[in-house]
Amino acid sequence: MTQHEYVFVAVSIILGLAITRLLHHVAILVRVHTRVTFHWPTAIWALSVMAFILQFWWVGWGLREVEEWGFVDFLILVLGGIFIYGASEMALPVPDDDGDDDELDFLRHSEGFGRLSALSMAIYLCIGPYVNLAIAQTTAPLPLILAIPAIGIAITVLMIFVPRAFTWLSPLFAVYSVVVLWLTA
Image (cartoon, rainbow, N blue to C red; front, side):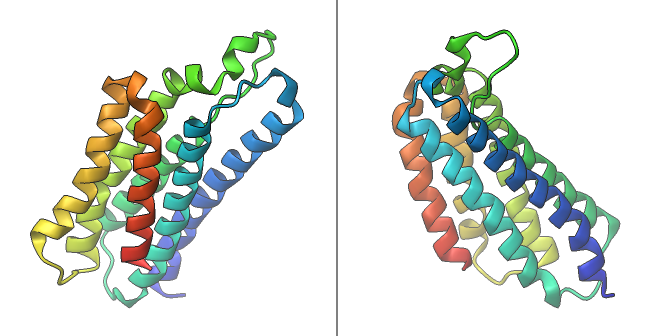
């Protein structure tokens, strides 16, 4: 087993759990669909989170060329997985046992726990420059390596501090996600 395989087993487990939790939340919402107040931007946000989970997994394959792995590299990748898991866990509303129908309002969720999802995504995006510079040793220009995650961080920070803007920030983040997928594919 190579070091890359060893490192990415742990990361893959976390990413697999993130996908599982997001899909599980979708299944729960389908089951209780009569109690759900649907809101497109929250669904778009959840799809964007899924896109970033898959993008992280895909980028991990690109790191197979790295010959020497340090513990800090491993720790950064695991933390990235943990934060993307957090973004997926908080991306969609799920019912509690108290039967409160307000908790299944997508818009109200995005202005509450959805902000935690955005915070988790913002922290996840902070690992991008480290992965590109320290682990992958990308030769892309430094301003580009810093600007791309900075755009996503700016959008998510706006979601956190201006929750009423989530309605138009979520589609904007989806466009950002597509651009990141295109750049890293």
